[in-house]
Length: 263
Length: 374
View (tube, rainbow over the protein chains, first blue to last red):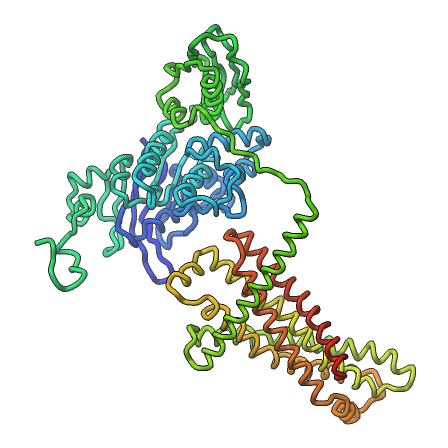
């Protein structure tokens, strides 16, 4: 099976500050690919490069074997239209109602009439369980609702690739597992490929079937594979410790001098 | 996701006894998904099955249609059998509720003049109260700042002073120079008829010192600094930064309002004074170029024209304008909503309120000056 999306030797940096270097991985069509790693290791930055918001300082990303960053601006926009992105805190347009947020991409990029758009908006919001919030403003929503509304907006154009930045962070366990189900169903139902950034172990184990593990210290990928494989058969102690929620004693110095709870 | 069949057939459906038969391609973005009438299931029995044999490609367009069917079936208490549906579509359909409660329409009340008037009056009284208490809090903060006990950072004050002072010099110069020149032009045309050319100096000097420099500088600052304050505070409001200050116990009046208002109060009188001089320079240049007036003669006439109390009058006004602009723009920022559009509205409101307020206050000063014979 060909890779839908690939990173080829990607190095990301802000000025002279390197975030991640020499990343290479393939996202298979129809898979749920997780970008894992501890806080501050640059997961969201990698996602930014994949969706086309941040140009890698070295290397490139491929979309269906086409060099994304070597393409023209117009071509990049065309490729980007097949992407749906859920940002970390929803990133809803605050001046528009939830319904208008979902409707805007449809209005801009399709020739559907108002009635058809209204029905689709209701459907997308219904899929995330928010059909009653059509006329609400983002500022009136809770964090979890904003995230679900953001997902509905990401789904507006039936994307081939859905990028999710921390989809379940800050959600209660029930909403979070409902969201996991939703993501699985969307993948199965719509055939979308999903790239998600997450450090929420339960949802990683529940849905991701492939992934890459980034390390903040060495600033590169230290493991490839599905989360459960990394947990059960991982070779790097840093990765298995993360996946098993243990503290890797020899690698991280104790936070404060004094009694240590782990021997 | 999309098989390579290029021939698309429009989606269609019909009822065959207790079976719902679907044909064609059900693609949402084609916009051809038919609606499912709410009375379509009137003639069917207790259950409704689904025949998907004729369906080609499908995506959420199909789900959209089946959701309508599902809701209609639920209302008519008919069991909707989805066995014929592919597993993935059944999962998506399962996510959708089978009964949607329409959100309550927002009740629109008719226009009631008395209610409206009452609301407006209460609003004005409320705003006056809030503005007064903000002003009081800022004043007490200012007093404490003199004693060195205010919760204000000196560095904020310095940054604000730089923004409101030196950074505004260019625009204040340009506006006042041109204003002085315009006054001289207008005066020259009239006064030359009476061979009273030299009185152009009086006209420009008195107008600049008493009115124009203070008002024009205030208008420039209302647009430049007042708008910026309102936008900055409104953005902080949207990011919950104001809430964070409140929780930690840092008074908003001390931390944000005080440096903003103080910096305007410090800089505006000097900008105004500077504006007077530049305005007179503008008048001087025009007079020398157009009229039979000598340089020393113009300067002499100017010095004789403006008494010190005229300067004081302009000076006092500019302090009043500074307080007005500072307090109103901060207040407008504080009461802004939390969306991006609200930030724009706050900035606009602050500029408009600032300009109208400056002119209104100036007219009050004119009446007062008349009363005390200044």
